Image 1: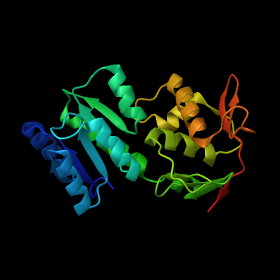
Image 2: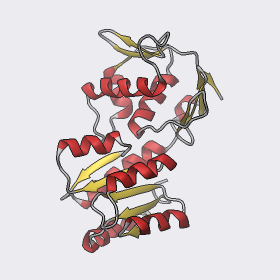
Image 3: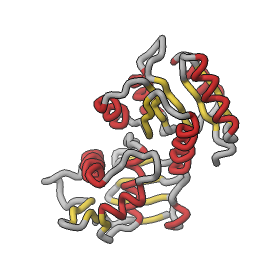
Image 4: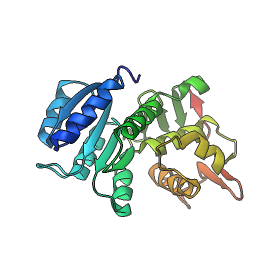
Length: 237
């Protein structure tokens, strides 16, 4: 996938744009560039994009809101690239659907490595399980297109980390998984996941599944002193 992936670099600084484009092309990626939000929309309309590198300080739009707009329509991975280095900015970006968050200044090769890692996570994990579609409690989880669809037919917005964590739990339904096992499954280099954040991720996934206390038997059970277990009945296709 790496040699064929199409990367859209959205950056209003010409020097940074040229540098990123050169490094990505050297790594074997097809690259399109855009210096504004409008140019980004036009580029996405012209051709399918496999990943977006998105600067948050664009002249015609706020990058965070632009990412939200993209996420409502697409699961294309987004790596935010910005000078906004405050922890709250990073947390907000990740919570709103970014797959990674890189602060300036950065080493171009590190950014290329992060691109490679995010794209690698997009490859369906079906190879190990032999299945690309899970159904449970009226939900449908498509590993190939990385979509989670509710019983009402609504596509649920998830970050890449949330999706991967849920996929691991569902693929091993009924088996208690430790936090270390979940970290190993979702904590690739460059991904901001740690032991404590596993609990936060599970909490967010539960909310998106409506899997809250008082809503009936939990789909994701807490195994006290151990980790988590997916307890729903899963069908594969």
